[in-house]
Image (cartoon, rainbow over all chains, first blue to last red; front, side, top):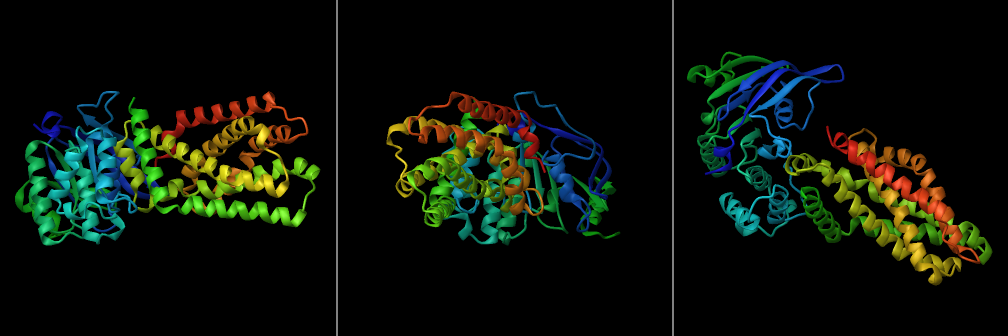
Length: 234
Length: 224
């Protein structure tokens, strides 16, 4: 049984505002995301997708409003440790090897038998042969694979993905879609920002479109979900 | 327990990346060696003058070294947003700060260890008789430099003009520490060396106050 199966987590965002100076990145965003939902966020550049994901990851504090998890984590169990996050930046160290990077985060996350877990993930992302190479020698796509492997180390209950297919080749996208499908089916809650349709967007059970920091569409039905991702009625 | 295990894992990362590149140590050692050598050639001090001005010069050199060495601590974490990855992975965010503090103190002490024999030769200051006492003063002074510098490095890393901000904030804030360290060192360089417990107590108090403040409010420093 995976950790996601044992700890299904939902999120509730209540009237979230995020201001940078006088500029609103998010404006009164309220969402209830059920445990195990796979939500695709769509919207033009600057619509607030990244800010929303960073608030959900608790990396950014909202200017107003409240983020809660259900069930609420207890004192000794930080909610952030149940979260996996793939951002625009790779969030790994260029001066360390792929294996050193993953081992570092596996030890911080207190994963049992970290070496075996890291080896398995490196095999999954197709980087086992380059395990001892410094990340700075990798291509953009290879770095993205390490970034995704880092986020998946602890089989997180909440997975936040900001344009996760960036730089991946078709095989990489297929692998990522299969991995996300497995995590979704195991009960992980997935929030991802996407542009357009892909193998990955096909996993979404709910689509939300943001515009100028506000939610302008939210649907769970097939045809509408597709239009949200493709901007068909934008 | 998680705090110490997280800190030791992160300290290992700090040491591995620095000893692999040696960028920080090499640059800083060369920089402060040049300062000490240039001052020696410019003033050509007598033994008496060295006893009077040497401690101040030594601690100014350490201060310059610290402002150079502490700057990249958190800046490096910005390049690939690795600070966010660390914040999502540690059990106690203070571990991120503590590991950087330990690494910075160690790097500063290594720099001082390399500089001291050259300083003793150039300025004709006998240090052999006061090595343990001097080590204590250097440790407490360096810890204070690192605590303050690492804190300000975390603050300045997220600001504009970050390269200028750290020295601007660091120098005035460290003035009390600089005075106490210089006075304690001067007492050890005197004809009849003594360990000045009053200045040592000041250094200990400085270190404890800043460490406690960072432990209490450090998590906010790491937020975006």
